Length: 242
Image 1 (cartoon, rainbow, N blue to C red):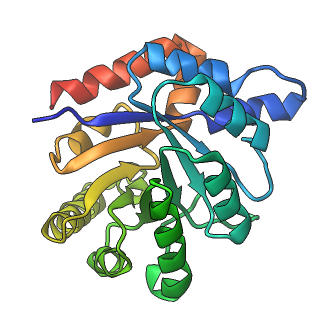
Image 2: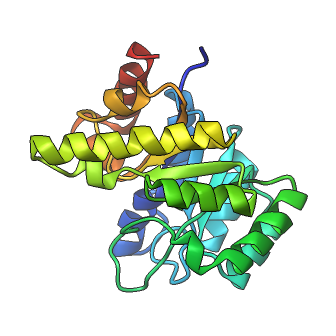
Image 3: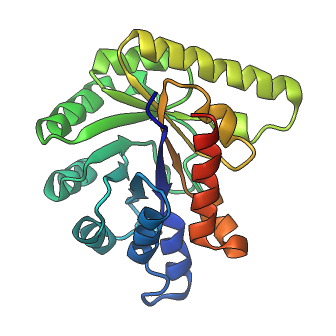
């Protein structure tokens, strides 16, 4: 059994930099440190309002890192053009609202089938692996299959951020069901959003989930134990159930 890949999202290194202005802390330095400490890939979300990662950050990441870059982007013509120009290893298409603090949920694929089908086709022709960020919902997985998406990334925030036993169990069952549907349809499953030390083992133990993308928790934890140590600990917890 291959180990679950760990992608580290370095967006909030850029958030901290932008809060003060200037060049410090540098997201590229964080990405290189992530590589050194067990990350299998780097994720960066180039938002339409450029609130954290910038266009120059994407250029610098592609020029400096040796692990795959996963570019998160909204389904817009601007972002499609940027992806086609930069040619990251992967693109994860995510919903985006200007007023949200962070991505609040998955795409509703049924509302944008034609546009998404076009984007998936264009990106795939550029040899960019495409994933769709969706809720763990069987209807959405089936829509992803209809669109020809090779990968879905499940928004697992509702599972990770719940504290009542009944609701946690209910959300986990949703994830299991959605992953099973993805397996049946030949779609690779990833997971992201809200994953911390307390939740990572239960998600990584779902063997069909091939990749976890973790950002905010890792960057927050690094304040206390250092970025390298936070990544090493997350990698260790994943490996204990692989």
